[in-house]
Image (cartoon, rainbow, N blue to C red; front, side):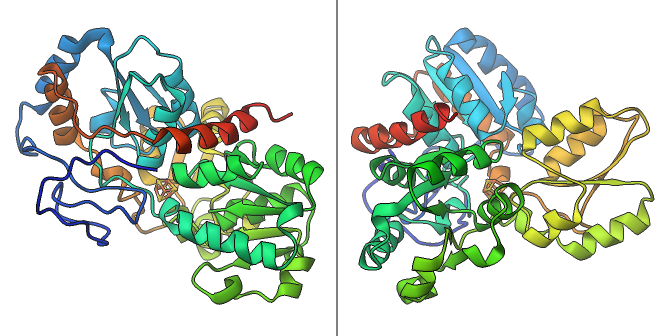
Length: 392
Ligand code: SF4
């Protein structure tokens, strides 16, 4: 997997996660952080007008995608909104657009590049917009894990199932080893398909989605799921533990959804009598057990939209989306599940200055921050994505 960073001479890669905007790259993570050129000042009162003018000048040549967790200042310029999978499909549905501006995070832009034509340009307005969960599974770590499974004599009967929220390199590994990608909407179908094909599943990189699906949807016990820690020899597991497991969960999590706690569920039930607790399956198992409803971002939006006036929800997902749900449904009570603020900091890297900078460069004919996945990686990753689309 490669990302077209066009680093100037003298700019060294750095492993630091969050750097001053636009001055370094981080090839060891799924993001890069180098943005060439000068950004408009965030204080510029004309930013909204500049974005409007640039978008109008580009017309149908540009297609702007906005993930549900993006800031409202960005979402207002999105031609479509959605979760990661819907947006990748939306990108695929616009072969006439020269430029796909992806207001989301790095792995999403990679998926869009894999699914769109070679001559379309997929652009991530800030290359620092990565995903900490995707970074928790690197290609080297996954290859090493597969060696561990091979040594234990179980690789032949193990099917990789990888969550959409992983790098193109992990998607490619999954495709090359006969596995499938899944989303939070179809994880159960993906697991059922995998169990028809093999005896065990290697689920990457979100342990919580894997565990919640295995236990709550598939009826497996917690003991049948083991946690593989890529930072420990043999994943921190004995060979007997690996051989006995039905699901090998990668030790990764979402830094946003992983923060919701069972005590927050208890607290909100006292604070808001009659509340329905609605959470995302990336939340910890005990939180999902304590909630009333669990489902993907699209499920959360639909559930709130279809509820009658007066309904009360405590929502456990990213705060930008929860705030927007509150604004869109003033006839309902929508509260955030935790008392503390919980934005996705990397999603938040995409802001109006970056969007204006990208659009104005495109008006000038300059493509900046293009995301390109190398052809071999893209081919293998597409196999895994196509398998997901073919799930029964
Ligand atoms: S909300 Fe979680 S999974 Fe989504 S981009 Fe942010 S860190 Fe990654």
